[in-house]
Amino acid sequence: MGSEKESSNVCKNILFLKIFQTFRMAIQPSKLIIAFMAVALICLAGWIMDFSNTVVAITGSQGKIIETELQIYMTNPDQVEAYIPRTGKSGDRTGVFSTLWHFAVVRFHGALNCLFAFNIPGVVLNIVECFKAVTWAVRYHLIYAIIFFVIKLVIIAIAGGAICRIAALQFARDEKPGLTEALRFSVKKFTSFVTAPLAPVVIIIFIGLFIFLLGLIGNIPRAGELIMGIFMLLALIAGALIAIVSIGAVAGFSLMFPAVAYDNSDCFDAISRSFSYVYAKPWRMSFYTVIAAIYGAICYVFVRFFAFLLLWVTHRSLQLGVLGDNKKLTAIWPGPTFTNLVDPPDLAAANWSQFIAAILVYLLLLAVVVLVVSFIVSFYFSANTIIYSLMRNRVDNTALEDVYTPLEEVKTEPTTAESKPEEAEPGSETQPDSSSSAE
Image 1 (cartoon, one colour):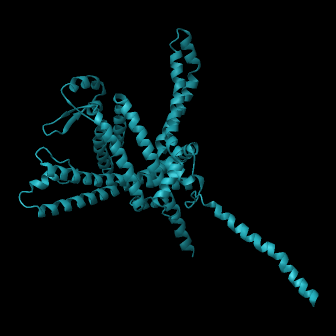
Image 2 (tube, rainbow, N blue to C red):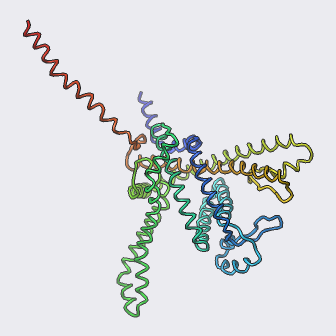
């Protein structure tokens, strides 16, 4: 008996092993459906907005883009101002979303390769370059970036909140709520899901305005320098607060949605919990994150290989059935590779029937790619929900099974049931008295 108790205590202490439940949770159909709809809506919005074609680009002989202003910005940001008017006259145009999509795909796989090679600086570099690409969009395509960011935030708030809610109930109580139930919860807590990641940004801007105003006052002759010197201590304190909020927001961003899903938190409670968990046990948080990232990368390779095998087997089987030199199949479907699951068909020499068939096949293949991306989204929110539960257990000593549920009114039923026997007790006491009196 003693050895069994010791082994159970050891298993309880090894909480990071619970992160390996993420794959089983991420492939749950309800989560994949929600993630698929979210990714599809974001891509649809991006492709519709790309009709503006505001990005300057250079295309090759086969119509493929070989250089964009984003690539110039990544190598030397100072050259973009001259590159846009010089190349814009003779070059082609493309969309912001498609440019960022292809760039993010390259950096994502670059980060995976660095992660498998245990090249942590390479992983960080690829992530930093993705953020740098976002700054390019905000700097040179501000209106597009604002509109797309708002659309993406709304979709992610609803979809991410629903996935976190399903993951929380599944991990805590092994319950699997329905699709509509999870979406209903995320819509109900929509304000918290949207404002939680935005509030730290607003706080940073508000504190930064104080430093900015102090800098403006410094322009006053003679008196400006003195005022800056007097209030410099406050400026340094404000800078320290900005640093604290920035670190907490970046490191604790992934815990904000699970905080709302697990504890029905509002905006500020979700921020407070995520910040406190990050600063209370930063090394444990980093350890859980690294474990989830490595495990997620392995699972992604497996899912991508499954998708490639599915497409490759289908394409090869079609090749066996198509007679001749297979030019018809090549025109409709060029064929997949592991690094590039889907290639757009070459419709230059296609007739009307091949054109329609190629478009239909291409849309179906894009659905497979979106499904792979949906797995990434589902895995991300599911893993962070588990990490939130583990961090809450370590910092607040809260049980892993403790999750918010709106069905707490059921607890009042036993009290009404207990009141009935109490009302019957006086009657039961009178019966013996009457019998005794009869005797």
